[in-house]
Amino acid sequence: MVGITSYGAYVPLYRINRMTIYGALGWLNPASLLPGEKAVANYDEDSLTMAVASAMDCLNGTEREKIDGLFFATTTTPYRERQNAGIIATALDLSPEIRTSDFTASIKAGTGALISAYDAVASGSAKNVMVCASDCRLGKPGGFQEEIYGDGAAALLLGDSGVIASVEGSYSLSYDFVDNWRAAEDKYNRTWEDRWIRDEGYGKFISEAISGLLNKYKLTPKDFTKVVYPCLYVRAHADIGKRLGFEDGQIQDHMFTAIGNTGTAYTLMMLVAALEEAKPGDKILVASYGNGSDAIFLEVTGEIEKARKRRGIKEHLASKKDLGSYEKYVTFREILTIDTGGRGEEVAPTQQSTLWRERRMILGLCGSKCRRCGTPQYPPQEICVNPKCGAIGEMDSYRFSDKRASLFTYTGDILAFSPSPPAIYGMVDFEGGGRWLFDITDAELDSIEVGMPVEMSFRRKYHDVSRGIHAYYWKATPIRV
Image (cartoon, rainbow, N blue to C red; front, side, top):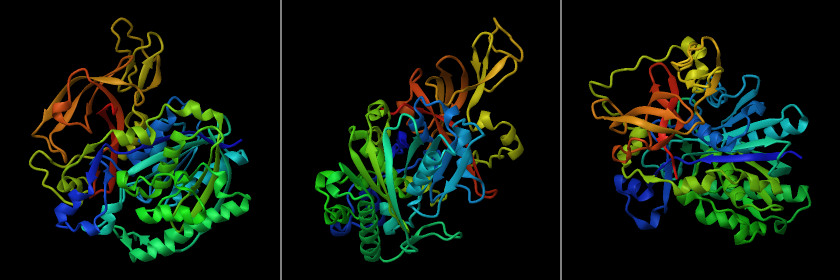
């Protein structure tokens, strides 16, 4: 049996109400407004950091040494020539002896990566493959896409042991259908006529893929507990399922008014939400959209009960803060350029040779642990920091990224530049030992206090546009509850 063995998701802490966007742009005609809010990545987040966050949620105690593949699906790769999946694998401290690959250029790349991971495990060429899907797309200010695009990520682990939802079959369609596109020189997505996308795209491709799967495996809509598919048109979403013969209770909630259209991650995030409520024996039909459609047939097993302890979609939706400011939103997305001030001088980037040599320390947040006395320390050292030990050259690698921690002390700096002032940083004490200075993100200064629990989050440290460098490191965040 081959299928999903674990799942995870990530929704950024911040949301922006669509009325905030309309108010900033002077659009106040209720007849033409979309309801709800959308998820907004923080200034130090992008598709890659969100993928890491969803993968951390998915791993949740899994032995990382057993993972032998990582596929990353996105249309918003930070790098066009540098494998983004390789950065994620390094941040997760996975073995270098794994298969990594980027799936991109279509918002159905998430299901494409999922099917490819299944094929790899089913063929025996891999045992456990992680699939991460994430997007952080930009719509031009004042345009329809700005209202609908949300940010988020999902991760699924596929294997042949401890399967919580077996893959029973799939059916795929590929069409060169031009609805949304972004050329190499474009910053923002472009789009064709709205009704064309709704009627000729979503309305036909998803239906065709689902019907194709039902016919291929001699199934009917009544055989399924849930059907999962995306659609950015709220009214049309339910209509697609009803035309195929599905009842209201079978159609998975679209989440569009809660997070927006998260692109490549959208379908897999909805699937994670379905798995959170699934029971043994449930059959789930998943269909994606984008230059055609992939439809996948899953059957939930009794192992599903062992995979409940995840933040997943449910806890991330419950944990949120209203961004409250359209100006802050466009600053986060580097649409509005702001003055960095006299103390915001250019940061010298980490030399690529140094990053290579220290990749586990910088990207993987790995320190060392003394074999003799068990004392961990960061950065890694050759000499044990414990004055009662002092062992030399008796260190093993020790990962801090998945350790809980607490804030020993902190500073709110109103002079240092930050896109979301003030800059906050502090000394972090890790459970079991180890202390280091980290930036603190996803937090307001008046909510910080000494001794509060924190966890580590992989974030973008800076974006050097002139050199084309996205630099990543770990920051401390208050634990989301």
